[in-house]
Length: 171
Ligand SMILES: [Zn+2]
Figure 1 (tube, rainbow, N blue to C red):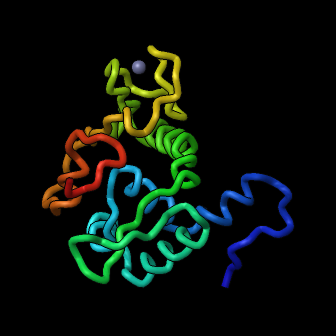
Figure 2 (cartoon, helix red, strand yellow):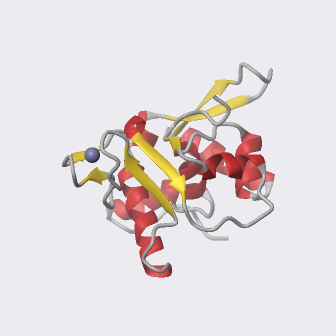
């Protein structure tokens, strides 16, 4: 079994990978940025084994990137929300997303991230080229633009439509 740490690597990338380098982890964080908060919604959208999701969420909470809050609508269940530390990952996540889309797609983004104030598509890393600012998450509208693959579950459908970043899924 492979270990999680890179003790011999004196590099910030190794430190980052110790927290977010496991399979599914960055996709869970991506969904959290899009407003997914409930275990069942992560499970539905990502279609990953529930035991793996449990383990990844625990790791992210322990690392201080997500925070558990009581779910007011489901007694005994939790909402998982990004902490300030978790939110600080956004520029890196956005840049990685764009890199992935650029090298595998036809040059068109699979999902857009626009500055609400001006409608401009963000540059890799989350800056608005029109306004020359790094756009706060609350001022970003995101929308899936690649062709849908039916059938689509309700969580996936909600995440396809234009929505503000961080807006809770069922709000
Ligand atoms: Zn702008």
